[in-house]
Each structure stands twice: as structure tokens, then as C-alpha cells.
Length: 430
Image (tube, rainbow, N blue to C red; front, side, top):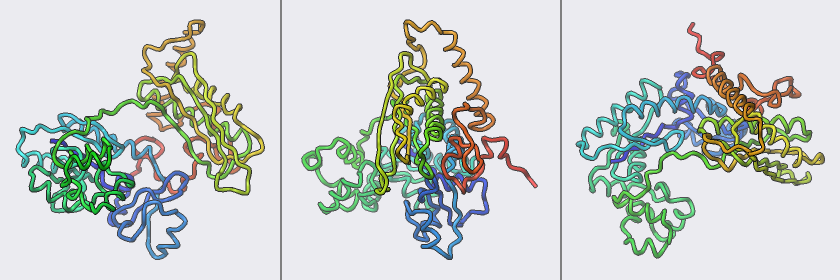
């Protein structure tokens, strides 16, 4: 028996943890640079707010609605969902994290369905009480059916936040109620194709013979989905693997022409890549930087370029990666353009121990010093908040007098505080 624990309206729920006054009120969370809506509360959905709606259109389309608006705060979301995962770790025999707001769990099939259902209901109550985030839990013999069950648990209150599909009768009933476009594993392109063939629900698709699925689609993912809908467990048990490449990039709030300003942004992106490498216990042997102008500004000259560098000694040192990224930026930079976006990518990722050093590099002591320095800085930033300690290359005073770093290089006028990760944001009781 598989289960999936899904945080309801994850970003919105995280914002509401420290804002109980927003219960039953429309809330939206915006994308980077406060561009468009990426998360909505149920009340916002009821108003008709669509995902992807540009922020500036909210006031025009909903002039009388009192909508609470938040900028994306991934530090807060990562911390709170991490607490949810820790509770799941304690309660489930085995699990793996599928995304920031979803976890799959493996449950013994020898347990009676009623006890498994009760386990799910109690897990929801514990997470809600301990973290403050509501979750929906789906239980079924396959992962695809479990995803389907979590949808019903979220939609219908009668399930008490936990829906179980444990009989063939329940499976067929669920399939008949589930649109084919919402099935896990069926993308938008294949959903349109299936609709054109007269297949509108998961049940319609599951009723076709396997030979028809193979001949019509010749796609292993579609075939696996068909088998899972028919109760055959065949989606691999994917453990969370370490990333093979890491990219950090952002569009600038405006456009940038001077090299010094670009260097600060690239330094911040490179430092963030180094942090991610250390967090998963890896090093990178290839660093690349890309730079491009605004493709929507047809009145301006356009430029896009990319450059990479292979390192003799793989590293996760912030100093090394920032230095190499700035060397690449200097090669890419052309002074006659206005730039809209830059990014840093690290590749050739492998474990951080043992690291094969350059045969002719005699400065092994310096290598160990940089490792100890990064460890101390990571610890300080974890306790006191990210960017408490950073390199001088990562900051400068902007035209408005603010220090430009990764955290404030993007627009986030409606960003909430981080009371669980920053001493400066700790809640004061009055």
C-alpha cells in the first residue's frame, strides 16, 4: 500500500501559519520579481483568480476584493515543509520526498484498511497541530491511484483529509470521476490527444486493452500509467537522488548595462550554487555562466551567450566558484547591450569525498582551509539567517542606497518575515 502526503495550497498555507487572521480570506503568492500568481487559497480560486495572472491585473480584475498578496519566500516554505517531512519520517515505515510539498510513503499491506485509514487521519491531525499546515493523504495499491485518492481527500471533507482506495469497486468509482487531463503521468499534449479519441476520464482510458495503448502511443510512461490505473504497481520507487547539475538564475527587476552590477548578481548566483553543492555533499568539475538581453524589447539590440570552464580539481568552495564564474562573465560581457537575465550552472557533479586533486597542485593545506571556512560560514548562516556572512563580491550599494545581494536583488515588496530561521524576525508577544 502506498500513500502520498500533499500539503494543501502549500505556499499559501505556509504564509497563514503566522497569519491566522487570513483564515477564510483570499490569499495569493507571487512568482519571483512579484510577476504573476503561482499559488492561491481556495477563497482566491473561488473569486476566479487564475494561476499565472499578472500581479498588476489583480486590482483591475478584482477591484472590490480584499486579496492578501505575498512575495515568494522559499526560505520560509522550505523550513516549514521540512518540519512536515520530519513528522512523516517518524510516523511512516519508509518514505521518499517527491517535491517540496509531497511525500510518498510505503505502508505494510498486512495492516487492515481501516487501521491504515485511521493512521492517515491521525497523521493529518499531528501535522496540523505541530506545524500548522493542512495536508491531504491518499492511500492506494499504486502511486498513481494514491495521487488520485489525495485529490479526493482534498476535495471532499467527508474523507477527513484521508482517502483510501482499497477495493476494485472504489478504484472503478474513482476512475469514473477523474478527468483524464488530471491523471499523474498524462501531460497536456497527451491529454488533448486522448480527448480527441473520445477518452474523457481515467476510466475510459483504463478500459482500453494494453495492446491498444502500446500501438497508439508507443510511450513507456503512458503504458505505466495505464497499468497503474488498473491496479498494477509499476512506477519505479524513485529515491531522492542528488542533482546532476545545479542552475541558479534570475531575471533582473530592470535591465543592467554595467559590468560591476552584473558581477554582483553572478557572484550571488555562484555562491548559491556552492551552498547547494555542500548541502547535498557534492562537488562540481564544470562551471558555466550565461547572459542574455530582453527578447521582448525588439527596439534594443539582442545578445545571448554562454561560456563554461572545466576545473582541474572539483570543488564546492564559494570562493572558488564565485571567482571562476566572474572570470567567465568577463569573457561574455559586451558593453553595448542592456541585459535582462544571467545565470550560473555547475555540472560534472560527484561526491565530495574523496576528491581527486590536481597532481601539480601543492597547495593542499589551502584546500582544507577553504573547506573549514565554508563549513563555519554555512553554520553561521543557518543559525542567523542566510547571507549573514557573505563575500564582498556578493554585494554593493544600489542606486536606492540598499545593499544588493541575492535576497534583495529580486523584487519582493510583499515578502513575509522568517520567524523560524532568523533571530531578527522572531515573533514578539505583546
